Image 1 (cartoon, rainbow, N blue to C red):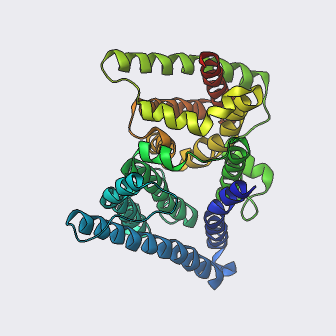
Image 2 (image 1 turned 90 degrees about the horizontal axis):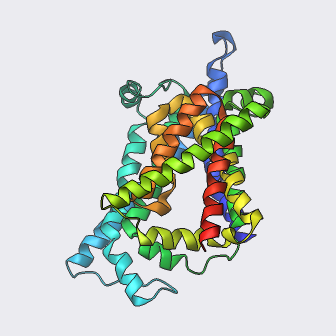
Length: 351
């Protein structure tokens, strides 16, 4: 229960920011005679809260980089980490410069994206509305995904595996909590509760009542995607780029218990289909475009590090994005569920 609550609380600040931004956007789009200073207040409040967050993370990153540099100069001891073995503490201490850079660089970029001229430059490549409060908060907040990925990359999958070795034996509740929160995040992001009712929010996300057409196209595409992913991994191995054993070890540690039951395998597919598709293909894709959305989708799977698995996820994201543009998000949900469940069944059969 503590882990589930932690997941929900983790995303609450972003949900609050999106509520504020949607409120400001709603007031901004009113007739000039009906506008009030409230729109500007909400805009300044949302931007300021996000800016303060990035400033704190930027300063923390600079501090970590400085501590790592001092350690390499021999002027700073190895960090003491409660519950961590000395060797693990040493590995983390040596990675501090990269960990710090993974904080301060995305934070700096997040701050820059709050500046209109910078957003106008980005708008040449992404279909974002420079003046939209919601687009601004969403684009700037996307730097948090980069930060999350760089942290995993800097600290190393082996270290992450050691740090998470004592996690809950049943990851299903945490996974469902995360993905349900993702779904709510997508709804709030597109204006639910503020600018749109529930029906219009679903329409904006590309969510429709499932039909046999959705199911048929989704299952067929999902199975083809599985075959393509396995083929890509085999080709990479043949070319001398085998899978990273640390990726397999961490994935098994995080999700392995789910492979032992039908409910666990269904959780792998249904939860990701609900949350990830609502956020990435439903909310983000129409505003960030196919390439950047697929890149963020790959980065959020940071447990793969930089490996052939990351490339596979990026390609899967591209295909799901194309299917979203061709059909709708309901179809991509069926595709994603089919893809994950099929891979889960393959993994369970190979145990």
